[in-house]
Length: 442
Ligand SMILES: Nc1ncnc2c1ncn2[C@@H]1O[C@H](COP(=O)(O)OP(=O)(O)OP(=O)(O)O)[C@@H](O)[C@H]1O
Ligand SMILES: [Mg+2]
Image (cartoon, rainbow, N blue to C red):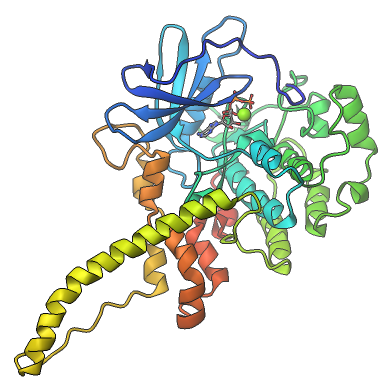
């Protein structure tokens, strides 16, 4: 537990680029350092160009070993789409490691990059993706207990996934369900007084009171996080827990949400009276967020404010490359056509073949990640679909950029599908159905 910057740091042994871990993964660069571990960009030694992220936790008597727990949670999450994918894990003499798909940048880094608070469009989309990530975690029986900007990350640095946000860092997660002697699931008994877990800036009042955290506490932390990345929380400058608590208690909701969409305040007011065993009404929260999103004409296909010229340049280059490739293919196809035209002239050809037409729906149905493929997340270097690296994510979603780029052309001319519907096809995790499901009955 700590105000940012987070808790005490382990003095880690730093790996250098080029070092090989467990004979399988080559260190490429440092991605991040946290209280629990060090995260590196790694390359699969057997497949050049296959990048992933490796989190390393040093084995030390002084620190809780949280990576094992995180591996356990991610293992259970394998079937869930649009969540962090566990690819590999292992233990060496001095450290434990886990390998996941390589993501883009976390919200803290993005917020620093643009040097101002996020606008409503970013905030509300962050809220929906975070709500999805938290609901998936809760349905597995875990409370995350460390929702903060550093733990929300873009799923990739480019392509379709760069506009999708993922919840990461399950090192603080705790199970809130248990099974009785007949195997029936029930709520785990609340402990009386527990050590502080989470981050002072975002945690709920329950956490300050050392109460067991429930699902509502994750959602309250999500709201504080949204305020922080937009307006900044009034206790931003404070680090002392008592002072933070006093300010959280004294700040009126009307001041806290003064310039934010009204719906966020309504969500906060709904969450505050909930307690440990209550199941939050995810659908109600989703509906409130979507009401604001519709009212403000926000679309999940829109570029985020942090997408800079660099990304645009990359996308443009990629598009131009694809166009050139298509033109080259066309040239090859057209050559025999010319011959055919000649033949036609002399009456040898009776029927002309009609060109293949692709509707927008066709294009975009291909873009929805295949559930079977993404569930096979256990690392197997022989499989072409099991190791989901950033690069493989991109290749799986080839055409997603195109879908976004094609949108104005396809949908204003052919009217195959409007942009409002398309966003749910491109980002299935934001669909209402996900927020209606009940995986556990309480
Ligand atoms: N899969 C990933 N792809 C890209 N970057 C990542 C990935 N996982 C983690 N990171 C980066 O590393 C940072 C630290 O990772 P993580 O939060 O999992 O570790 P931690 O030790 O628990 O950190 P903290 O104590 O700061 O929360 C993240 O904030 C993010 O910037
Ligand atoms: Mg973290």
